Amino acid sequence: MTKKSILVFGVGELQCSIINRAKEKGLFVVGIDPCADAYGKELVDAFEVVDGQDYERTLAVARKYNVAGIITAATDKPLVMMARVAEELNLKFYSEDTAIISTDKFLMKEAFMKGNIPCAKGKLIFSVDEIDDFVFPVILKPRDNSGSRGVILCDNIDSLKTAFEETIRYTKKSSVLVEEFIEGKEYSIESLHWNGNTEIIQFTEKRTTPFPYNVELGHIQPADISSIDKEKIRKIIEQLAIVLKFDNCASHTELKINDKGIFVIETSPRLGGDYITSMLVPLSTGVNMEDVLIDISLGKKFCLCEKKHRFSMVQFFDFTNGVLVHNKECIIKYLDSIDCCHYSFKLENGDIIPLITNSLDRYGEVILVEDKREELIKKISEFFLLIHSIIHE
Image (tube, rainbow, N blue to C red; front, side):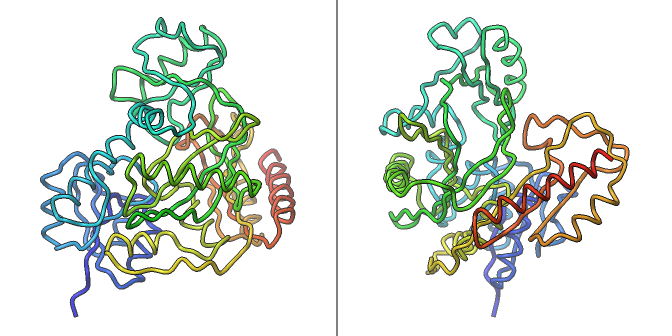
């Protein structure tokens, strides 16, 4: 019997997990990527080099392999293209309008405001002279990028002028988004949407770098959120799915909670990155969102029965920037000795530990799971104290 084919947009490191899940389901996996030497090209059954904006070539590949579904993970870049291809081939996906709004932070902000989704006030600016009606601090963001690239907190007009020049480098637009700064703890909500249904799978608690940059350095599941706030969040996510017309997809929604309420920062109709949905959700709940998304894309039935109630965490390394790495062998030896689910350390001897200003600057991580939250926090704290001492030997 001929295998069903599924098309994966992007064959980078972030897509390897979902590629492997699709292969484990017995699917013929077709991968496309603009890079001829893509990280995961050896994992797929068929690999094609396709520019990220080449609709005709992408459609031709989809037809060549008679794909029954399309998927990606942890990236926003191909979503508009995926929506166009899905519409042309009558595959399970959301609309092109949803993809366009979801990949433009300003259009998303407008949709939030019209749909009564609680969010920060924001507007587009083409120069720093247009900031007069905002009270500092403010956040600058590119409209069309992700991974905290170009996202900077500004405390005054001088820092705004400097930040504007940096933020504008991370966008193809001539304007950037300026938002009021919302105080509070940060969280992300991992959800699934199908046939008009919305189901939150897990609540994730974030750890980030200090400002002015706000790069994610860790995630813990489940988040320490009250049952009252969880119920409020469920209603917000349901309303958000209606407003943005999320269907046949996962979603990763970032929000903040403070004494004034719950505020959505942004959302995307895709699986979360940073190992959130590829590793943390299965470890903490037993639900594999990648498996479910594959089934949704193929129009298959699936089960969301939770099997676990554990605590999982990813912590990215954040050691003193400017320090010379000279003892990688000791670091790897220690990492090999600890009880963890996954680790990586990407620096080499002679490298200088970089300042983390966006997700691409991160140079390694460790993933742990425990039965109790306090055990997890204690374990990660002890681990980082020891590896910090090795780094600085």
